[in-house]
Length: 290
Image 1 (cartoon, helix red, strand yellow):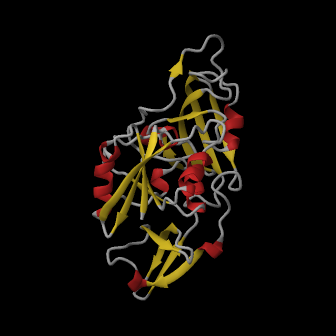
Image 2 (cartoon, rainbow, N blue to C red; image 1 turned 90 degrees about the vertical axis):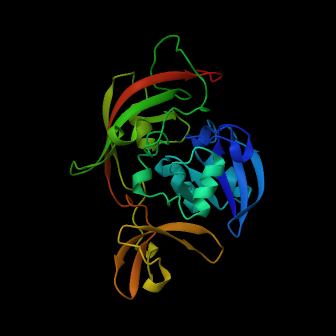
Image 3 (cartoon, rainbow, N blue to C red; image 1 turned 135 degrees about the vertical axis):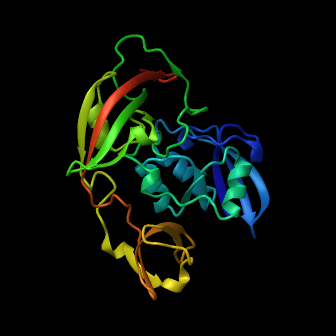
C-alpha cells in the first residue's frame, strides 16, 4: 500500500507534517506491506494556483497513492480524492511522517468525515494548527486590499442549513485560509467574496448541486453485519474497496443483528447550505501578479 503524507521538508520519515496539503513542500511516499515500511521516497509538490485543488489529487493518483494522511481539508479536494479512489485519513495528533505511519499501522488515523471538512476551504476545516509552515509567502499589498485572484484570504465563517442551524463554524475549527481563484472553495462562495475588503461581511447561499452534490441513493448499500468491526456504531465511518481496488469511505446509517446499511454520499450531500462569512485578512502572495 502506497501512503502519502504532505510534508514541510524532504526529510523522509523525520519530516514535519504540513497542515496545508495543497501547498506543502513535498509529499513523503511510504510503501507499507504487512504493516511494515518497505520503501520511502519524496515527491515534490506541484504548484496549484493555476491547476486548482485537483492538481495534488492528480499528482498523487499518477504515482499510485492509495491513502493520504492529512490535517483539515475542504469538501472539494476531499471529493476529488474520493473520485480517484484515494482514501483520506486524519493524521490526528501526529507531528512527523514517522508518527503518522506508526499511528496508521496501529489502527489509528480515522477516515475523514463531516467533522474534518467545511465549505471547501482547506484551512479551518480540521481543528488543527492553521499556521501553515509552507504555504506561499505573503507580502504587504500596495494599494486596495480587495479580494482578487491570487491573493491569500482569511475568512471566519458559520456554515448553516437553510433552517438556520449551525453545522460548523470557525469558532470551533479556526478560519478558512485559501488562495482566491485557485479552486479551493465553492464557486458560489468565491463569487460572493470577490472584491470585498477586510471586515466585510456577506452571506452566501450554496445549493446542493453547487456544494457537496445531490444525494445518490444508489450509493447507499447493505452489507452483512459480520463484515464490520464489532465496535462499529451508527454514525461511524468505515472503508470499502471496489472491484478495481479503489478504497472509499462510507458512513454507517443503520445497524441490526444481521445487516448494516452504509452510505457513500458526503454527509452534506443533498443539502442547500448557507455560509455566513466575515473577511479578516487579504494578503498578497509573493511572486503572483496582483
